[in-house]
Length: 434
Image (tube, rainbow, N blue to C red; front, top):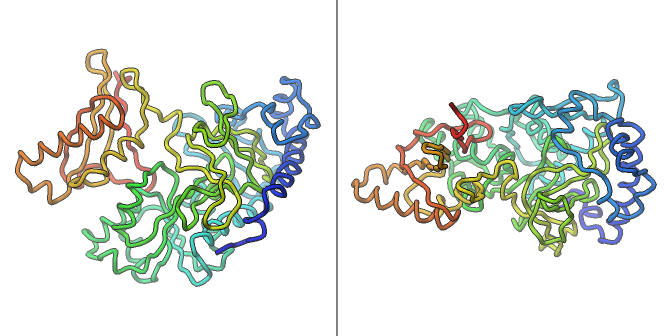
């Protein structure tokens, strides 16, 4: 299914022409309307007219999250405040929050992008879409709301939290589509069965759009098994527009990027050099049509690669692989760089444990140690001590093989690790705590 087949299946040559036209327009607008970008260009000895080809984008300076915090709150807006009809922010847990401003045109665009994403996985006006992303300053809830409404689906704006009520709404309203974080979807399945007494398989859920945190293919299988639906990956970020930058189609073979609105690159995160398509590196995004807050070469810190070959769904727009981690979430332990993604993958390959875990980093004697707390299943918890110890050793070997260093695995009781109604907190770093 297509929301806008003519655009989604646009011939590559025509798409590149459109991208270049829009790139020139957004560069000119940013230079003229945003003092931050004018200063960046002037310092680089660059003028908007110097951007003549898509390849010339490499001359444009990067924009970072630190730049956005420095411009807090409205320093990157390209439209006067009276034309900004909505603002969203990041959590701001590591400093001043990132602020995103939207004009009415931007809100329309956002709805269009999410409508494409949802239609791509079979959502129609006949569906009941329950949105369990947070509403408010977080971009997730309202982004999906605008898109689902645009399609004409019935929207249940449940927001995050109040899990018992979420389950009751699914049952009573006959919810067919769920949108939330992948970790919360697992909690919903667990809560429905154990706290409300509802078998998730009896609900009418058939598809889910999950994002806002890293998750693995193994996690997808768990979600699909426990909720009885088909699980799809959505990608977006506050700095660009929110969710809707990219989404999986029914082939589940990478996330289609809406290239008529976003120009993507992969760079070496260390050198900043552009890498060829197919090589893994850091994703950089330029928003081509954002009105209120254009973003030029934003460094996402997300690690992936670009897939250019044609998809089975018929869409011609490039895909990105599932995000494997963030450069700023990379853990360095005893000189080895690893991602939580690798540990999750190893855990979920082993029978007898739940998809709930935490990674605890300590430095007891000037040497980094890594402990992984993993919940046992109810069946495993009732096993003999010897069998539990064998499972623990198996997990240690599997994780060591995945990340290249020895880790300590501690098996904990079922339901003893914290559950999240939003993004799961996977890493507890105690190395710098006094």
